[in-house]
Picture 1 (tube, rainbow, N blue to C red):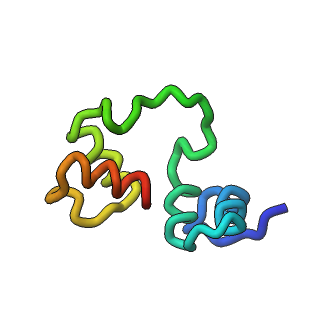
Picture 2 (tube, rainbow, N blue to C red):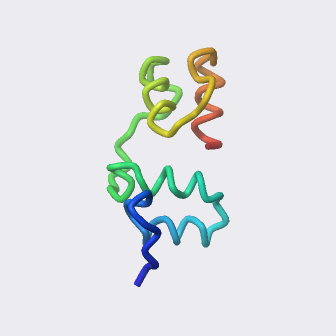
Length: 82
């Protein structure tokens, strides 16, 4: 059973699994707290096929700072490495 990390972490089990894989606390928390973090399907478009506006929404969702000044290429890089 996963340790309870308080109400700031919505999916404690997911958070612990991500931390065990070596992710930082903030990145693991962001992923564990997204509404669709546990859903599978693999039906999302590749970042390169999405619009810049869509990428900006995704970047906002995961908390990437400075996103409004980034190019599409920079947004893709930031999303893949956040």
